Length: 256
Ligand code: NAP
Image (cartoon, rainbow, N blue to C red; front, side, top):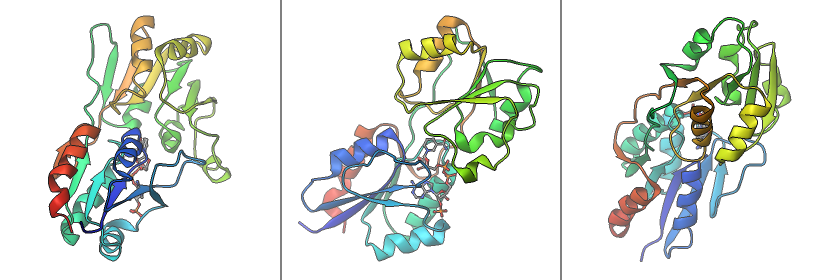
């Protein structure tokens, strides 16, 4: 069997799961790519590279130079730039590519959601003078809330802001909780109560790892501002790790 090399664009639970499933297969080398913005991230099984490729041209060159046989784009649904770049670079380099596009969360009975098109819109619809606003949109999305001096925020993130990140605009009244998913329902309910959360701002990431806060919010009747996702990437889409493995399995024998 020839030697093949698969590139997993990761930074998600699915990326880790795919690397764990594919690493160790005979004749297959697995490389996971991470943006490299989170300190001390978990390390996927197999080889890992970190940092941007340098746009479409950089990724195209990487695919050719490293003789990549196939790409699974398992990045987060809101990481739309790298997904777009992957689609274009794979087309240019003639490398098969699939995007793992996990299903969105859907509103359930009892949910009090207000859907908005962007994080900036979310910042604008927070009621004046609001307290206990729980931000789960990530450390790169604090600047859009910076103008809301009237609002008291609590932001959850994986790790404290770096010195560089600390220089970026952010809201004046902001405290932090640090934790990394997956999160469970009891802990989320306790956290919402402990911090007297009255409103949640989140992106519609989908998946199970971050869903518990929405179940907790439903039970506690806490309203949610839900940021809708960007459009799905163009190209082949699957919605689960299993489907991505099937996609790869169906091509494995013919890949160079
Ligand atoms: P993005 O806006 O789509 O990408 C910005 C740039 O970062 C890309 O153009 C690329 O740089 C680089 N990049 C992104 N993901 C990369 C990867 N897996 N490997 C190598 N380079 C990557 O992405 P983002 O929203 O900042 O997300 C960055 C990473 O965090 C992704 O791996 C994503 O899966 C993960 N993540 C994102 C979110 C979120 O809410 N956005 C949530 C959880 C995890 P070049 O153009 O130089 O190649």
